[in-house]
Amino acid sequence: MFSKETYIQRRKVLKERMGSGLLLFLGNNFTGMNYLDNAYHFRQDSTFLYYFASDYEGLAAVIDVDNDKEIIFGDELTIDSIVWTGVQPTIKEKSERVGIEETRPFAEFAAYVKNAQAKGQEIHFLPPYRGEHQVWLQELLGINPAEQEAKASLKFIKAVIAQRNYKSEEEIAQIEEAVNVSVDMHCAAMRAVRPGTTEAEIVAVVQAEAQKHNFGLSFPIIATINGQTLHNHAYGTAPLKEGQMLLLDSGCENAMHYAGDLTTTMPVGTHFTEQQRTVCNILRRAHLTAVNNLRPGIEYREVHKLVLTEIAKGMIDLGLMKGDPVEATVQGATCMFMPHGLGHMMGLDVHDMENLGEVNVGYEDGRTKSPLFGWKSLRLAKALEPGFVFTVEPGIYFIPDLIDKWRAEKQFTDFICYDKLDAWKNFGGMRGEEDYLVFEGGARRLGKYKPMSPEEIEEVRNS
Image 1: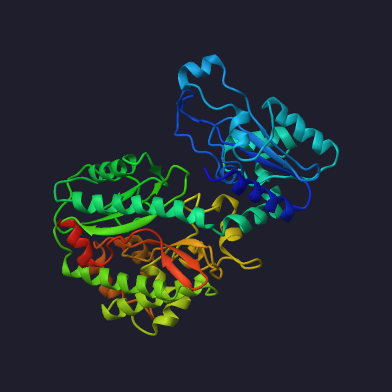
Image 2: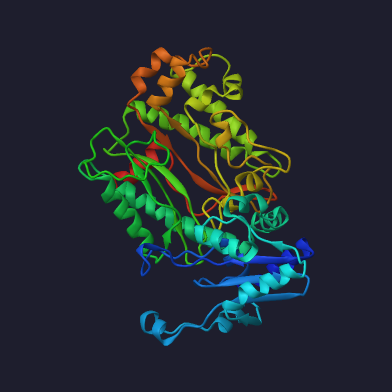
């Protein structure tokens, strides 16, 4: 937890931005996996953490701008709970740590909101992402769950984003702590992977590295020999083989819930094959193209374009593409090989604040996503500003179904050499990822260095 003053100041800025109204903050609860007492891992809502820091279930809060009140609602533990959980700080003690003086029983939350509504006070809420929050909002405000996202307060959304987008020095220190352990997770995987090991075994090694620090995962681990499937969370138990590659996309969440997010593609054997090394070097050049262009003021969609163009150049060198690489990128042909965006904002969420809307977080007011395949998956597009923390994660993939579909539809025949792609259908995919911060003078990588080049990865693999 940061100092009391940090949270007081955050709420002060939010109140000034909003000007009036009642702001609702719905805390998260335990959710049963197959019965109530066998629950999924508890994770507090990130916006609740940002303004109130209380990492406990069963809480709600309001900031009543009109009446200058800040209240946390929750119930104290009964002896029946204490025998299972042990003694915890009281609601009042938890609240005082962040400068909240007024606390009330949870049962009074609904009455407070309904009373404000009856008086004509404007009620602001954020888009719900959990079913219990949808039910909660329906009971509080009478809004059908199907209408809640559309009726969420855009002013509230933008006010929160305007604060959380810009990471303070104390937040950056927390993110770097998470990134450093995330690097350890990746290096542990590089040292563990061998012919005969399995994806599931590598996942166990990676998760154990986070657990050693009592850190959680910032998202479910991706560890797969099928790198062409972008989010493959199925872990095989078949022995890995010489000549295969393992794509690992994983990161940890530190004690304050700040995230790291990294990707490494590593050989199962002692070395990459020559074909794999060639693609890995193209990927490395694309990554460095992005990194070398990071600075305040540049639009991330422009960095994305530069990366795709570098990948197109590499595919032309391999005889898999032809024509003008810039034009191929603009028209969308290069998205055959990289059908996702270059990166996303990162902080208390690994995809920071995307529950508030990708476009709200990653695009300028009035700008919308491109309808083009690949380009429409760009989560972060707007101009970079000091304080932004985000990922840089180019990839190169050979997706058989996509190759067959576009060839049958005769798409981009001026740019893609379909007759040469059959020999690459079993290649899979590669991705490399680091986390960056923009500051007044440029940008820097967060955390310690993770091996990225083929030679660096092989050195750790064989250590």
